[in-house]
Length: 394
Ligand SMILES: [Mg+2]
Image (tube, rainbow, N blue to C red):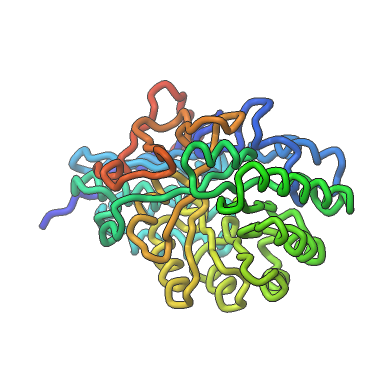
């Protein structure tokens, strides 16, 4: 059977929302005094944009095959990722068969290993990998979830991440994850404010609705243990990314000391099968949360998920919209998915990568039927109203 080759790879940058969901205007809940590792400096405490969280912007990787089929994907990484994709990774893609996904991944990873392994380089590589899956699906005229083994459930179920779990409950979600607002530098007073916010939200949503804290790497071990113990009284379901992603030892201790029944979750800033093997073998958490746009793409998520499955750990991918949905619906150890509420006041459902994609499906009453994913590739298109900038060529 003749398989087209990949003729062109192009990398673009887009500003304002899209895959770089921190790149929002003022007054958005996602930039409102959220605890971070930089919050120890008062001048960087009020806003994550103040220390540059949105400095990179969105990366768009576009592929064109010899038969005219096109595929694309979006992730973060902006201009430096576009440089890596154009100047380094393109050589492994152009001229290859569009079915050579595993080989291309291997070549991209090992060719960049001496300066890569995690972070920006793996973001860039993930963008290329997702574009390859989209291209393969478009060429075969099948959704990516078919290529991954097919749906194991008729629909996806979602929890929502936002500052307003009470509104998420009204919108039909199964739970609400709130950003932690006060870090260790704000002392006992900050800790009390965190607990008071949780208690107030618990009163609003009742006892059955899931509530979680996303700590965005902001805590140290003792604070995290104290927070977990006090939050347990208010039925906190999980404590997410409490510590630095490099502190595997801290996570192992936190999991040991967390109150019985409270889950420890992490992994959105972890990458590759080797990084997740460390989290799993050191017993760092109950749920791993790889972001398919950051962890090495779909090709790597398959491997990460298999490791977790064999150890009885759940995989609940971080955000990433359709790129996660096509995977989650094919795996029993991914029983639900995350939805990031991107409306500035978290009071309505808008597409997660708004305004960059057209046809991006969103949950209705906290659910999404598999039919919404039954389009070739990842089933989305680039919005022509968004300006793409190509900073480098090759
Ligand atoms: Mg998180």
